Length: 331
Ligand SMILES: Cc1ncc(C[n+]2csc(CCOP(=O)(O)OP(=O)(O)O)c2C)c(N)n1
Ligand SMILES: [Mg+2]
Image (cartoon, rainbow, N blue to C red):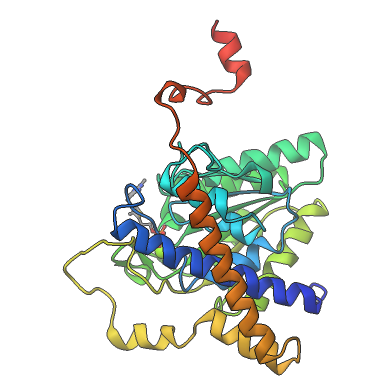
């Protein structure tokens, strides 16, 4: 067990979950109106898993993600404006508008990047953990990936290497029980967390991934272990996405049972945690209402910032694709 978070940290957890929810709700509307190119994959319903994990990390610890990770920098405390601008493709975005929702990185909070290729950012976090170990800078790396990605071979190559070298890495499986329309139980043999044992590393399953404190506790333990040089952990968090796989997607088949959906919608992590904050006397109803209004205003401000930002000039399309060192070496 890690130390219980203080009241200010508990409120900050709620604030960041709300930021992700309201940001994603707005992004969903903007995609449907054609204001965001392509699509977005929201973390609506999974906020406890995102925030509980991110807040177990220090701001400069590394993290990588997948197609559903544009909200994760918010979990680490990033401001909303440059993230919204990135989704729209504006020059003020965290990647100057060249990454978009699926390939966004936010180095200011240690986010090394997401990738639309399922599983591909797991080895990148492992490499970041290797660099932290070699440099001795005390940083930890955490890879977010889904239950679908958990069946990609690169996870097992990464876990093997991380286990052999005792790397400071956390493999964080966001088990929302579906890979697109494929139910995890039809393609996944055994329990994902149990696979850690095959590599001699720690494995833990958080059954209630809608409880931000349960996630935070498990991930803090894993991060502590990594930081002390005790090696990697595979953490599987059971959760549920409330929206479609991606916004605006119409598959024409309802692959999720109505009863199941209803049961999980009742486990809204933000509603549950608001009740917990009240029960503990951390904040009054008025204060919690005010927090919701503050976050709505932050999202409005992020959209205003985005609207007022220019699109990048086409002349910069080939800038920032390689590091200066590489560009120098090619000359
Ligand atoms: C290597 C690869 N295979 C297939 C796809 C198509 N694809 C995109 S998202 C997705 C489902 C991923 O499911 P999961 O890893 O559980 O993440 P979730 O979307 O549930 O968060 C698939 C199959 C892809 N992008 N990359
Ligand atoms: Mg999934």
